[in-house]
Amino acid sequence: MKNTLSKIFGARYKKPKGILLYGSVQEVIQTHKMLEDRGFQVRLVAPPPEVRVGCDLAVEFDFIEQEAIETILASEAYAPYKIVSTKEMLPNVLKKSLIVEMDGYLMCKAGNMKITIDKKEHRIVNISGGGCPDIPYVAEELYGKRIEEARDPIEIGSSLCAYMLQISFAALKKEVMGP
Amino acid sequence: MIVLAGTVPYKTGLYIGPADVQGHVLNVGGISVPVERGTAAMAAACGQACRYYGLEMPLCLLAGDVGDSRGTDLMFEELNSRLDAYDPDVVALHYMFPKLSHGGPFIEKITSLKKKPVLIADAGGMYLMKTISAAPLCDVFTPDKGELYFLSDEFAPHPLYVRSELLGEDIPLESLAAAAYKNKNTARTTLIKGAVDTIYTDGVKVNELSQPQIPAMEAIGGTGDTITGLVAALRSRRDPEADYKSLAVNRLIGEAIVCTPATQIAAFIDAIPRVLERYEKKTR
Image 1: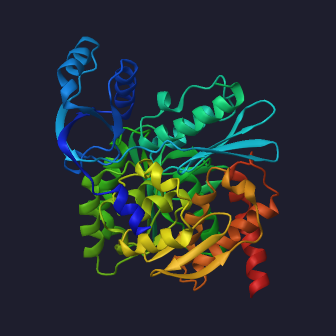
Image 2: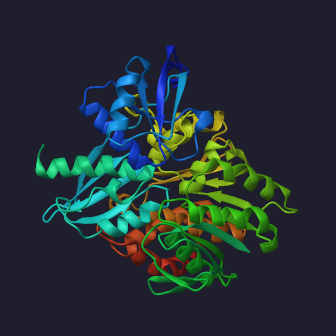
């Protein structure tokens, strides 16, 4: 365990990286997707501790691409509220999910977030886990809907837990609909 | 008095009052919220247990918050300025926006009380306490294994940031718990929910439960929240078996109502009095 942790944590970049900060998780996710689609080497990360509010996400980029990124962000009205630099190798976000079958239902979990549908109609029958305030609201909105027709959790909620739910939701949707 | 603080999906505001559980609805401070999951489920479970044992009903500080943190701000304004007025013997923190700026003043307030209450943290409350390094001041955390990864990872500010590399290792629960205690990132007592529920106190495994086995419970939103509500009531009652009993009763409820992955948590809350009654009779 200790070796694993020391391998993963505490690393620093030789050259600083740029960090785009936004006011909401949704804006960060949209920006990340837009920049990734355009071929930039970007990563979703936890903001550096000195600018962290408590439940937030940021986009890491290579400073060599700053000018191009800033131009695109300005033209697409995706301007961040702040750009900071860091040498700290910031945590990558969780992407792993696991689908479990039980008694006619499929449950998918990503970290502490779980979503369950019935196998026959693909209706969302339960959402479990999380600790951010929007999760009960997101769950209320999704409950009873077919996963093919339900809105993405991250369109309804805006927290990191909603983003984790999005990961399990997307994996389950892919499982029933195919890639 | 038990003080339960957390958010509910309701318009921004702070609603204060004793838990009044009527069927599948929780009435507090002039609002009615369905007992579906989260803080409402925790408060309803606690209320049901308090009613069964004849305890004073828990006082709820429900913050209407759908994710913009404004309700959470109101809740901490109240907790950080007036917690002493409630003279709590148990405080449970639940769903909330884990804003770091609230944590320090909260800890300052709770440690300034003449009599430190039992401090229980779950959900966003647990994330906050861990991230501000206040976990050792807490008496009970109630993580599942996914959240235990978060507690064991000293750098993760939220379960989302538990490294995929770390998750890929499928680390045994014992190692995760050891890391969480070593790094002072968990409470004195950690109730780890899962196929096998495990209780740790001060870094030592003190008990575990694996029966009855009810795999469907993992899928049901709120089955962790009911444990938090039960342990708050039982700790307030100074029940020496509080931790074990909370986990055992929760499992027995799943068995009694023959739950499936589609069962809603309200069915669990309905069954609390009769399962507690059966449990108490059997162990008396």
